[in-house]
Each structure stands twice: as structure tokens, then as C-alpha cells.
Image (cartoon, rainbow, N blue to C red; front, side, top):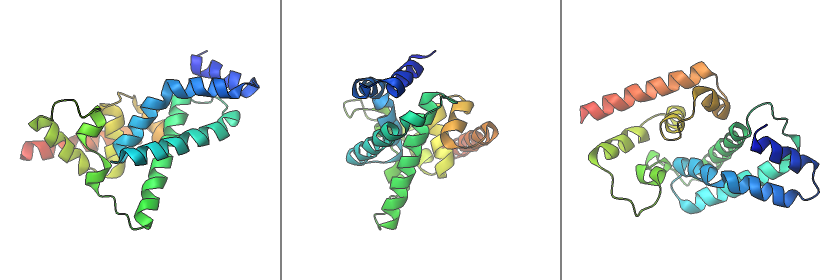
Length: 180
């Protein structure tokens, strides 16, 4: 039994849910934040979405049946909440451009790191031009190193669909980078 499973069982059976949930959150909050941050530009937006994710997880964790890995379910919740947020922003007229959805510097962490090399800049530009599903699959595979099964679970698609989206993304990126 994984430690996530043990924590979830403890949460579902415990009267001291806050402490157990805090431990589960502490364990995963940074990865959840960075997954969200890769999809939206603003730190404040990523924080707001992450809060919504953790509230939803708190409310739904009692019903989690452990049919999939907890992290797959968690990242699926984060993915859906982020897409909902982006759709709401578009409806409210706050247009998020592809430039707002991802920058390499945001994906790699702090601004204390050296500026991107030309290759990283080319990669960033090519990723921005990908369709949304291809961009997200590429980021989950390339930056997070997730296998196709986990990506399929997060994206709500098949393993074949995840592979196809990744393959198409790589082809488009190669085409863009070689055109430079």
C-alpha cells in the first residue's frame, strides 16, 4: 500500500482529518502548483486555482475509491480546474493568449535562474504554438516525465490518444525549431 493510500484511508476513517489532509497536501502541493503554473501565466491565478483544487479534493476525498493512483486523480482535478478557470476568463473577456499560457521560465522555476538559451527560447515559442491538448500532453511527458498511462488518466483520454498528441507535438516542435 502506498503512503498516499494509507493517508487517504486514514482521512476517510479519522476524526483528525485536518492533520492527515495537511500531510497529503504538503506532499503534493508543489507539483500541483507547477502543473497549474504551466497552464496559466500569473502566480496569483495559479495560487487561486490551486486553492480551488485543494478545496475540491477535501470535499471529494471521502468518495475516492482508489481505483486509480491518487496523483492521477489529483492532477486530473487540477487540470480540469485550470481549464475551467481559463474558460471563465475567456467568457469574461479577459483574453488569455497562447503567450499567457506557458513560458519556459515559469516551467523551470525561479527567476534567479539564468535566462533561457536560444534553444530554450525556440522550444518555448514552439510550445506556445501547439494546440492546447498537444501542449499539455507534451509538458506532462517532457517536463514531468509522466508515462502515457498517467497522462491519459489526467487528460481523460486513451493511452493511444496521449501518444498521438505527444507525437504530433514533437513533430510540430521539430518543424518549428528547424525552420529557425
